[in-house]
Image (cartoon, rainbow, N blue to C red; front, side, top):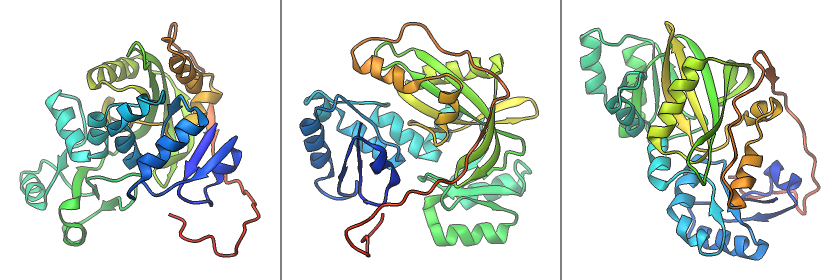
Amino acid sequence: MVAADCSNMAPALYVADSYYIVPKITEAGYIDRILEICAREKINGLFSLIDPELSLLALNAERFSGIGATVVGSSHEICERCLDKWEMYLWLRERRYDCAKTYISLDLFDEALSRNEIAFPVIAKPVRGSASMAVEKVFDRKRLGEIFAAGGAKFLVQQFMDGEDMDADAYIDLVSGEVVSIFTKRKLLMRAGEADKAISFRDEKLFGLLRKFIAESGFRGVIDIDVFKVGGKYYISEVNPRFGGVYPHAYECGLDFTGFMIENLSGRANAGTAFHYESGVAMMKYPEIMMKKTAREDPGELF
């Protein structure tokens, strides 16, 4: 496995077989550098764990394919839809999926508030964002106005989903396009947009909803779907078209997405599906420490 990051302070670099320090994805020459590494290392598949980078890699998928490297993931259009929460909301509403009420402006929110279609508390979040950065639970109109005044058109308002917070990891075959595996868990404790504690569960009703949603969306590879259950009804929230931060929970329950990926990169569709795992298996994250000797005291810019 070859890893790459813009900072030498990324711990994952040091558990890879080899690694490279590369420019930021916003810098000129980034894609050329990744292409150079793929050619040198004879890489046949690459993926990212960073949301904005998913779109960039997908946009350049043909360039990577030209040197024998497959970008593992969904199309550029789908990655952009997932990154843009307003676009995802419109897509879900158009296809009649249950989802949180969402407002792209304060004027639209105020109109809905006056009609009693929504009430505080609500969630304010960036239209394009990840890792729950700048997401805030808001309890009054004054604070909501302050957020929009500071962030402008970059924010939207969503209904607060007062129910069970859930998550699904899924793998969609790169060759056949079929759903190979789905793993669902209830989130028990969250931090920085990821579950610190979760417990596996199974519900055929939810599996059916997710199968339909995935098929209509056109996803490929690994995805992570946020779901809420309120009043006995499932609401689809957001999708990260990549490995979720707690995918190891699914792996330890026997669902080997990396194995599915390797099979696809060998040019073969995965035979059969993997939906069988045990309910009630708890996942509990805890910090680990990595120590590395560096060549200088100042590591430079980290991000």
